[in-house]
Each structure stands twice: as structure tokens, then as C-alpha cells.
Length: 376
Image (tube, rainbow, N blue to C red; front, side, top):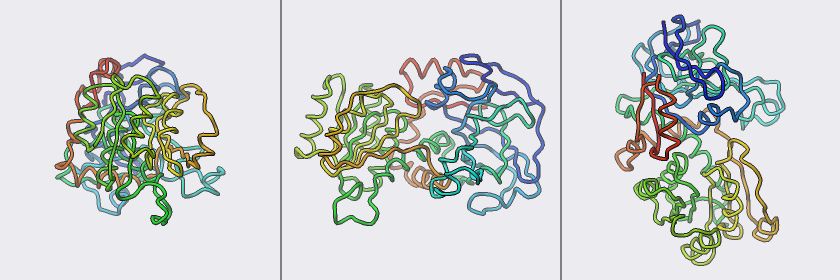
């Protein structure tokens, strides 16, 4: 039998037993190695997202391969042969999309926009066999024709597993600010550019790290939690704007202008998920700059915005929704090559057993944690 923490209704977690699964030809059975808890999990737990119950949560995870279907050993994302005992980072969103919706047919370079996208640990009903479609469990079933998986080197630290998926979110958000081959026009993100990051939660911290590793000239992080401000500095932030000291939007915008020679940031990224941060952030970007919205995965409400700020500023505003499956390769490379340079491992501040989900969520809600992980 395999145990799993099942979200059967909003705020209701049950630890249930499921029959051990056998892989079909294209699947592997993975023993859960480690799994992170992210904001999406909290929204699902609170009932703020419309997805089917019951569901086994957990989409930021790595697994150790226990069983391999007869065709699955050659289906690793980069073509590496899989063996029992290999450690895999699994892309939770389907890599083979429906092929019939508007986005699959006419916007193929943004596969994450597929209207029928299925996400392990998010919108996969666990009532039907093989049940194990999320990582708040002892094991996960992964069909490698539908979901990408990347084999991790032995040197890749186990505790960085929960950061791969959010690093995919963060690095893709930063890449949304890259100019299309027009560096001489000073558009977008590039070497030496000034970046502002609103919020130092896990995604904001990883955006900070990605900007630093990618050659940003300066990175300014805005946050109110002291431990997260300290972590942002360790991740490469040059300037910190503490909301406890700069209490109004006007004061924070003024400080950003002071730090950017009175002009404004080349790029700013909203990683908070509060509507007011969006309006504020558009005033922190210089004329001709780029503003990236990555924090609002759920509808948190409205905010008053003056369109003249966008028009007069000639600002590019871009949303960043999830990532294409290949973004995991970027995330694994960034984390795997630079974990000795930046303190990624220290982002995991608390670890719980996967049967202690309510306690883990309580710890996140208390503000004590930067990133919480679950193990089997």
C-alpha cells in the first residue's frame, strides 16, 4: 500500500492508503524524494481555485525511480537512459498538449497556455487508478509521454529539489524581459541593467538570484519580512527597500528613483501577488522599460491604475504564466551550477513529513518560513 495526503475538500486533508501501482509501458513509478509547498498549494487548500476534489497536492518535487515501464527508460526529456535508483525532476504540467485548442494549434511556442493542460499535484483527480498524481505521497506515477522528467546528477543537492519548479517560474519571468536581439536600443533585461524585484518570497528570491547570475548591474528588492530581506541580500540584491521603513508607495517609488539615477529601473518584476504592488511597480520602471507580472496566479482583486503611466512611459507590460516544459532545463542548470555561489539550500527553512501537511501550512501562514519542504 502507498500512503498519500489527500485534499478531499477545502482545508480537509486525509491520509489515505492506495494500492501500489504498476507502471504501464510509458510510465515510471517514483518514490517521492522531496516536495515543496508553494502558493498554489495554499490557494488549493483554501478552496480559492476551482479544481476537482479529491486531489493529492504536490507539484514541486523530485522522485527516485523504483519501477520502469518497458518503453519508459528512453523517454527522459534529454534522451538519457533511465535506471532504477535514478533521481528525476518532474515537470508537473503536461508536455504533450491536447493539440485541438486554439493555443495548441496557433500559439505553439507557449504550450503552457493549452486550455486542457493537466498538472500533477494540482488538477489531477485521484479517485481513479493509478491514483498517485501528486507528491504529497510516498510514490508518484509519471507517464513520460505526457510529462517531461529530467535526470539529476548525483552532485545535485537533494534539498534543492523543491526549488526547481519555482526557479522555472522565476527564470521564465526574467526571460520575459529579454529584448529580441536589440541590445543596442537599451530595451529590456541585459548585462548591466537595473532590476527591481517586488517581494522576496521564494519566486522573488529566485528572480533575484537569476538576475544576479545573468549579469544584472544592480538588483533592488522590496520586502517587509526581515529574514527574507536578509536572504535577498545573500541571493545577490544590491539594495533593499524595507516596507517597515518606507511605509508608503510614494516613499518606495522615490527610493527606487534615487537608486536608479532618477530615471527608474530598466526592468521591474511583481512577485508579491498583491494588486496594489502592480500599480506601484509601474511607477518604478523608467520610460521605455519593462514591467513583468508574475505574482497573480489567482485573482486577488482590483487596483486603480492610471493608463497614462503606461502610455506616457512607453512601458512594456508582460504577464508571465508558468513556463514551457523545457524551462526545467534552465532551472536545473542554474541551481546545479551555482549552489556553491548562492545559498539556495538555505531557502528551505522547514521540513515536515508528507502526512503533516496542516502543520506545514500553518508554519507558512505564520510567516516563519521562507520555503517549506515535505519528505516521505
